[in-house]
Every structure is written in structure tokens, then in C-alpha cells.
Length: 242
Image (cartoon, rainbow, N blue to C red; front, side, top):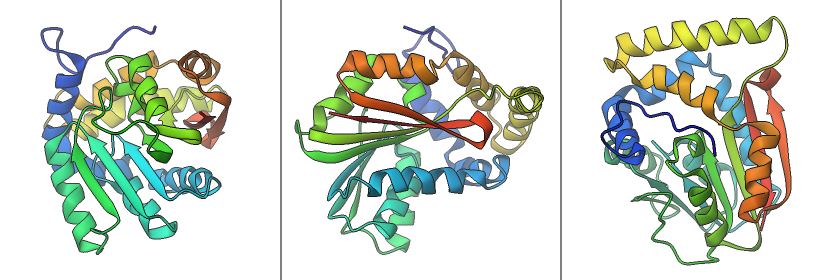
């Protein structure tokens, strides 16, 4: 397993620290996501939704849903009966519920407070499970993926959108400098959190991307796994089946 990177310290569990971190930056989260990615994150989510759409699902579970951006977009663009979003940060969910209400999607999108590594959800109850920029925050990656596998119906699809490390020179140098220095500085000034955006860089560096992540998916039980690189490798979409 990869080395664990914590947002703040080693005295509390990573799960608890991540919850606190996202609660602290919740009011600024959506703005910073779009601003710091120059709006490219919207395109990443569209490509993720296209992978979901290919499975023709009726019920989708969105892990680490945050402020429900992905859940809302899936509800708006796909013919779904229900999207359930789960997150450990209550203040992120509060913002998500306001967005769901404002878009009139209360009958489709349901947001729940919960730990993605110990889901209070019935086994084999969803057609697709998604996660956008969330799995690298798991304290126990294999445990979190095992839960995603458990709640999927047989033949169900997993779609994960996650940061990766670009390899193309010199773009990789520019990206690393931006991610390591500029992004944390802007995030710190905006959100007033000294660690949140430094943790973002550190957690991406520690995350087992590409084939390493696919190997963990296979170990967890997922089949026909693939990695789709986006924007010269800044992000990747991982797809697997139960």
C-alpha cells in the first residue's frame, strides 16, 4: 500500500482530518475548483459522465460527493431514477443540498453523511459507483474500493476520476510547479487554510496512479479495468466492472 499522507497531523485518523479540512474550505471549494483548473474540471466531469452513461444505469452512487457537482450533472444529463451522494464533510453536503434544491432535483439526488470506507448501504444495490477526486483521500484505499465493489450489482460499473502525474516534458515541470507552489498559495489566501492545498499536491504525489491503481482494483475484485488519461495526464478516468 502507498504511504499515507495526512492533511494536518498524525494524532487523528486521516478520515477525521479530511472531514475537518473539507468542512473548513467548503465555502470556497467550488470557486477554487473551477478557478484553479481554469474551468477544465468541467470537461473532466463530462467525460466521466459519458462513461457512466455507457452503462445505462438507473441508480448511481457517488462516493465522496462533496458539494455534489458530479451527482447533479449526472441527474441533469442522464435518465436516472436516483443518485445517492455520500460524503464525510457535513458542510460540503450542506452546500450540495442547496445546489440540489435550487436545481429542483430533490426527487433524484439524495445526499447522505457517511464514510465511504464503511457505507451504510445495501450490498448489490447500485448499477454504477462513481468517485471524483475522492479515492486518494481514503485512509484505507483497498477498504474503500472493497466497499464500492460490495454495493455494486453483479456486472455493475465503477468510474473513478482522479488526479495523476503528467509525464510529457516540459508540461510535467510546468504542472508540478503550478501544483506545488502557485495553487497552494492561491488556495491559502482564499480559503485561509494553511494545509488544504499543500495536502492536495502531496496526496497526488503519493497516490498509486495508472497501472499501480489498476493492480489494486484487480486485487479488490474489479475486472476489465482500464485507465484513460486526460489533459496530458493531469487526470485519469479509471473504469472497472464487478
